[in-house]
Image (tube, rainbow, N blue to C red):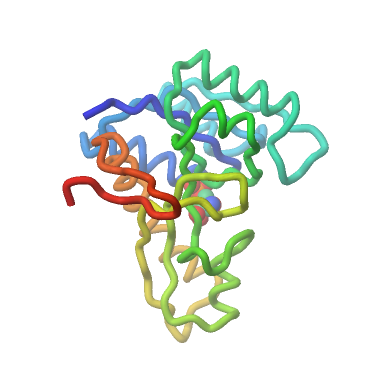
Length: 206
Ligand code: GRF
């Protein structure tokens, strides 16, 4: 079993970061969060990191709203290297990561998305699912490739959609599954159980 040297990138509340920190504290996951990076200066994810005494950085990403590129991307890569990160977990990071970062961490960048991919990629996935009328939704943890929410799927957890759901109530139910899913996916990775074969992520010794 390896101890993941984990960097977490996020733009918002950081509930997935919290779940990861709690999973480590509970010894459910062999990992250390070596740094947390946000593109949003006052994001709560940075406060959560500081409270846990994890080095926390804001990286100004300039005018591009949707991508991590150019100088900002290089700055992120150098922070990751300085802190010895070997795995990058995107947790509510609202930018598309590009080639340089993916090449620096091949098969080591993960993301969590609040729908059952490949349905409803992109923004406000829970609302897309509700408006479409699906009866099941959930979350997906996947390896990141150069597309938007298109990389090989590690695991998914489902929730039922209720007649009375609002976007908020459905999102909340999905998020309670996210907290379990991310820790589980990272545990599989730390235990060397995952092998990518094309689009499929196989579980070794399963
Ligand atoms: C989660 O719903 C995640 O699926 C999506 O953004 C949200 C981040 O939540 N990508 P948090 O910042 O981890 O609380």
